[in-house]
Image (tube, rainbow, N blue to C red):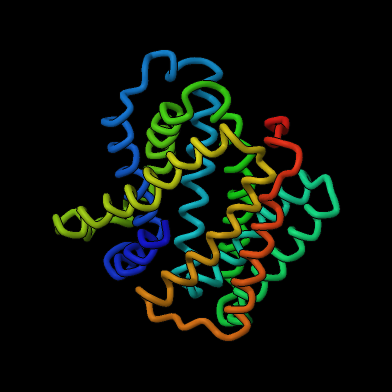
Length: 266
């Protein structure tokens, strides 16, 4: 996911962040349609409405996320964005161990965020908007995963989102004149959308949304690593300590002494 985000940052010089996010959505929709070929039932009734809502929320999350990383370091944005999963996990926590794990994860994410948010208040606003959308992604994603073939609904959802957000295509003008940049844009869709979101659908069918939300704490860690390796954004000692706290919290919350977690989908 964040390898794709690193590529997207390089494309911001040729298109608006929102335009890159839309191209990512378009690329994902095309690849998913070719791969899944959703049946007619996936395009009808409640299933279409749920898939469409999921797709628009997810694509909207990507748009505000890209607007945020255009203004703030990647690791900082992902840490702020994680407020959404933290809220979902907090609502679903049931035991003292869950709460301790959640505190460790939250403290770790705050440490990873560091103090680099002062430079762009608008970037913080976009990151927090992405956090709200991420919470919606988890809740709606769980419903999609258990409501039928989640991968087919994922394809339908991104087709709906591509159409609904099509005005953002005006921010991609320069990229249409370069096959290389178009290929990179589609690559972002595959790396940041098709692969991770398809895997999310598989995982969401097997886990409750609270545990899934805590496991997402590994994403700020991954974002920090990618930011360091690809974008030369060097983490501080505090951020490194935050990474260890996140890993410890995820390990604690992932333990289950009473068999598989079963939670209601909403």
